[in-house]
Amino acid sequence: MRDYTPEQQDASAKIKEAGIPIKLIKLDDTPANSNKPWASGVDNRGSVGASTCIYALRADPGSGDFKVGTIFVSNDLLKTVELVYIAEVGEDDKEGLDKYHVVEDDREQYGIKFVRRFKPGNVTILYYIGVAK
Image (tube, rainbow, N blue to C red):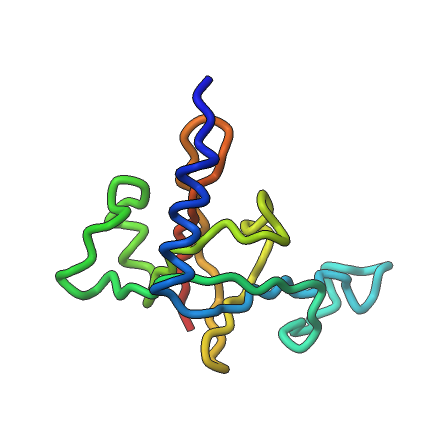
């Protein structure tokens, strides 16, 4: 099987050069009442479980210019989001970006609606992260 590591490193370098830093946040999913987790009714937005910082390109799927990645993300899925981040894999968390719940970009927070990987073979080259307020 072909090794796609050089392509992953090249994509990461290009995204770092042209992109912006974003923070991915995993919200704490521990229920307030462990005996009745279905009845806790707690908004966990203020409770951060983990986070990582990566670089990404920000794209507006509503603009007529958005063509990159439409092979990997359906048009129906793109209609459900405000922005799409084309993100590098990052060095801290190479295979786990789909566990995060929130993207923070310039102090604005967006809920993650979908995460798709561009992964030929066994190496993830980049991510498509769809978000909405």
